[in-house]
Length: 137
Image (tube, rainbow, N blue to C red; front, side, top):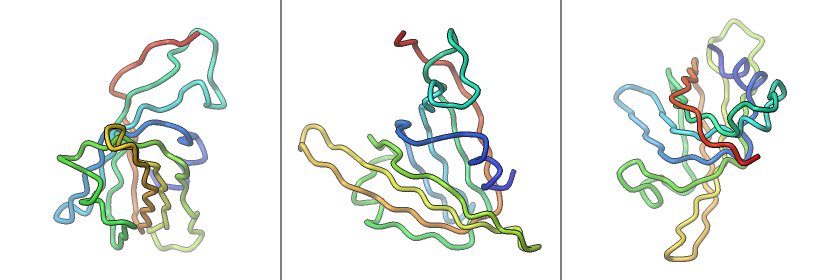
């Protein structure tokens, strides 16, 4: 699926990110996300508040991290929350779209918060639901 199509259908803001793994060899970025289901447009009372899923961004031809992820990610584990996640729709024949992801990463023992910006150009995204997570209500 094109990145802009996914972001038209799912709202990722405030969703926790548990893992982030970038593979330059495979040209992909994988994120384990607890999607805030209750913030989705089609949410219905009685559904799980959160959906655990994996988002894979494929066909990355350019990517930049600020700061570099190795400074904040240890073994792929990340304690983050999505502040912004969107894609610029490409109306040309080019299959690539620009994606912006901004995370707030918290290190609770050290009592620090870091804002991480990831900008990339990629051709495809895939969202797979792994499980359903507890209800607050």
